[in-house]
Amino acid sequence: MMNMIEDKHFCTEVLKTTTEAMNYGLIYVGEDEMIREYSPLAMKMMGITVQEGESHPAGKLNSGDIVVVLDNDLGNDDKMSPDDLKKINIDSGEIKEGSVVLAIGVYDNKKIDPVYKVFNDYMPDRRVELRQRYLGFSIEAVIDFDEGRMSVKVNGKEYYMDYLESIGYLLAIEGDTGNVKFFQAKGYSYRKEAAGELLRGGSFAGKSATGQISGADYEEIKSARKMLKGKEFYETFKEVLAAENGACAEGVYEIYKRMMYCHLVRVRQISPYDGVYVFLRDSDAEESHVRQVNPLTMEVEKRAMKKRLQNRALEQPDFEGFIGSSPAMAQVKQLALKASKTKFNVIITGESGTGKSLLARQIHNLNNPDAPFVEVVCNAIAPSLIESELFGYAPRAFTGADPNGKMGFFERANGGTIFLDEIGEVPPEIQVKLLHVLQTKRIYRVGSTTPIDVDVRVITATNCDIEEEVKNGNFRQDLYYRINVFPIRIPPLRERQRDLYVLANNILEELCNKYDMEKKQFSEEAIDVITGYDWPGNVRELENIVERAITVCDGHVIYSENLMINSRDKMSLTLKQRVEREEKKIIEDTLFKNNDDRKKTMEELGLSRTVFYEKLKKYEITG
Image 1 (cartoon, one colour):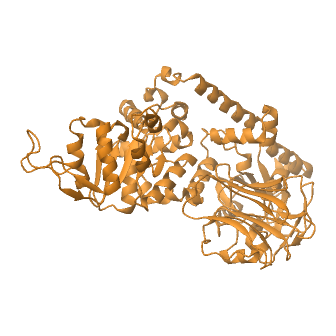
Image 2: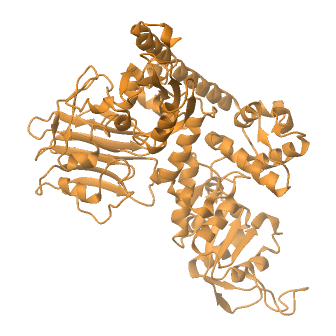
Image 3: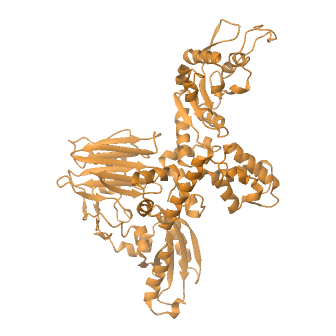
């Protein structure tokens, strides 16, 4: 069709309009590997144009400029090392490759002290911020890991940039005028404006209020090799370029360290329009529905799981059996990793079936896998026997006692870990004795006055509201303070919707291997049911339902009917839960209608920015 039409207007304008309507950018690369056309959306995706609004002229950092740096993974996608921060008078052994850094300092000035925060192995929150009145400016720097956003407010005016994996965000204020002279934007890689490059004296292009970039190397944007920079993508591009007319390739590729879903089409008809047409979509254009499973969504989740600092606990091999990449689970794993490096008493809270026992064992295994691990389910022991089971008893301590006496659970755990599950069910008289053991690390067997010293790490767990039990007088406050040194809450499955797809498939694979069955998969309808159900029984219930499904499923595909989830169970929600479910759906649908334009969505729904982002975080909406 293309060689029959001589009007170039069709090739460019109509095709670009069509792809933009489908929320795809278009890049047309000619036979000579030079880029002939960009659609407007493609130019925004590549950072050739930026969001309309704020502007600044071209330039470079000068002595006396105030510089704000935010980095969620120092050294990754920022061309920056700890030494570069010396340019704003920061020289700290705490800062290393992979650190999370928020910093404010004066460029090339050794007399004015900087202010900064640095996090390495653990962060206390998913949102870290640095607020400072600095040299007359009110500056607020924020890294929001859940939103994937970095923002800087200068005297109330906000500048921000979204990211997928990592970014080094830099903003500079002129020391003599107080004007913002530079702020980071998409395309900083090809413009050679990475934070490290600018700190080392590199120049930056100007930005106009209309979104145009000035002072950039526009010859470079014509080269496919330079602009579409990514080894895997470029290899695929070369294969398509060498192929026959109509050849296609598609997939998720990294272009300038940004993930793009790309569809490449070869046109080879001996016409002026021959070449490779690249249709692309980045995360900003991707549909936001949390249940949707598509190549880009899955790849982004995988990359985020591996590279974001706050999720590094997921890379530990010992966590392979504890599935989950949602923000809530990342926090749990970080806390567990931190707890494993100490001997503090840990209390794990969460509903029945969330995996408290598994997490306790993994905390133990991370630090001391060869030592004993003794698990005690406190409410499974008769109240009259619990003291002798925990601490043992002396020979002939009571009628029917073993004449040789018996070692208790604490002695068996000596040198390792004792896990007291359902600690809230321990009778009051035993609570007193437990408190004594935690204080002195010494036990007495029943019927004996001889002390036995024990070196035991204590991990406890409960599914009850133990603080409420303390208020009601059912649990000793002093014992609660002793066991609550390092609390970890495992969220229920209904708060981990993002994990459901991966978790269900992991359980399915494990069960098929366990029973030596042929590999099965969930239908899309079955996944919809799994992600739409509230899982009152948590992971244990999910395991049971998947196991039942593979038993009744005759073929390779598990349908919704095989799951045997009672439709009435789906409706067993409180009024609050139903309202929240509808509220989440309304926000997701409005985002989808507005092509993920958050500003337009919050205006349409009549929500303030603060309330809108609180709801996005609450419902784990990533659009």
